[in-house]
Length: 358
Image (cartoon, rainbow, N blue to C red; front, side, top):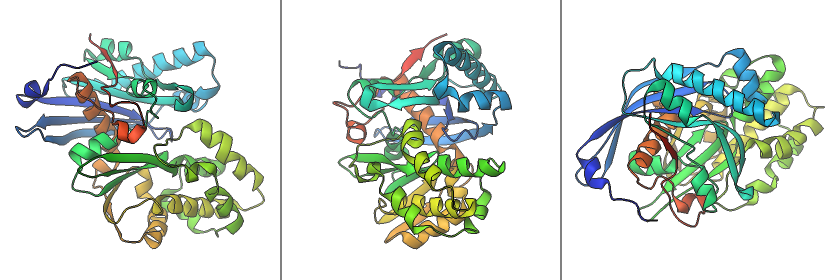
């Protein structure tokens, strides 16, 4: 289906968009407010105006964590409550022209043709009064794509000064752009793994990797983790929490004879290896909460060869994904392609997302 060419319309305007992102690591709801404009040459410019991360109430956090095991009715009730929580936070920001919500991923099984992110566009639009874009992954999956990662389109347009961009969130992912195309993929687990281990001692995360730094690397555990089949697959490829719990966690359970510090230290080494092997030579921009883990970044710097590690400045360090989904929502609103088939392996690029107009 051919879309109306809205480039001319875009050249005459700039937009303020609010983006929402809730990662699988469950560290909170990221809300970014940004201005985007397009130049006469068709180049995009973006400016992050405001950002905040809102911690989930304990009861909502617990329900999100167990969402994969919920009944259909309980999942819809959770979506209702998540959407109302998100809408309340959006209305605390200054005015905007558009709201774009990635939502919170519950299931991501593109090989089976499904991806599910919580976030009711109807509730968000009704409660905020803003046109709302949501469900940004489903159309790409319908075209046979992996539905992820999506941020590479943002990297191509707004972070083109770098040879590659890496986000260290629940999973680590990378995008690499050339003049001809952009390719990207999930490299492996990151904060999902480290936070799971930190919760064993009642902490939400291992600040600066302090506990991991006290441990020793288990060569046998490291070898088993690195031999997970996913790491031998060629892109396009993406990960979901189903893989995390079904493939990775059982390896940890088998190795409970090791001290927690040793498992954490080995996990950091595993994450660093999965990232380092995929980095190109040149300037690489890192963002996401994992970039705050100084021990992880130290280990990574020891393993890279020819890559210059650059860490995003505050507040973009934490805001990049919410900022990125604001941009992708705007592209959908303008009927522009916002998903790259070169990244996801879909049969075609697409302008993905459902639009709700209050």
